[in-house]
Image (cartoon, rainbow, N blue to C red; front, side, top):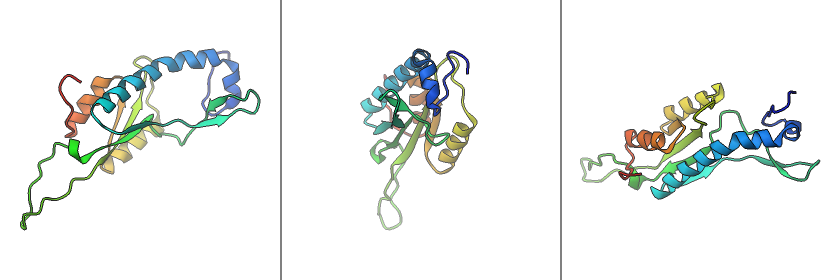
Length: 156
């Protein structure tokens, strides 16, 4: 293994160059924070997916590999934010609107590569009625949500 190489899930690699792994993850972490702040401002429940395991050698928590393709952020769009026309049926009953699942894979603006497993996950999520996207900034998220019929206030 070369100096600076970091392989998620191979714990020995975390000891090769923690500094390199930290440097590479700082930018993505900051993008995740901006996106989560935007989602929270819109009152969209969201959670960051992290798999952590304790290291027997150094007693620190390390990031472990999760299921391939699982996105960085998951959540749902509450039915109150969906800008879908609601028409009463023949009996005058208004049909219930349901929340939609949300999946966001955050990528760095430079060098963030969309993995094959991630692309497959996103395709399956969209086919199942969810909103799924790759995002490098908040504007991409807001535009995709608006295009999906979600009410996002202007200026966010």
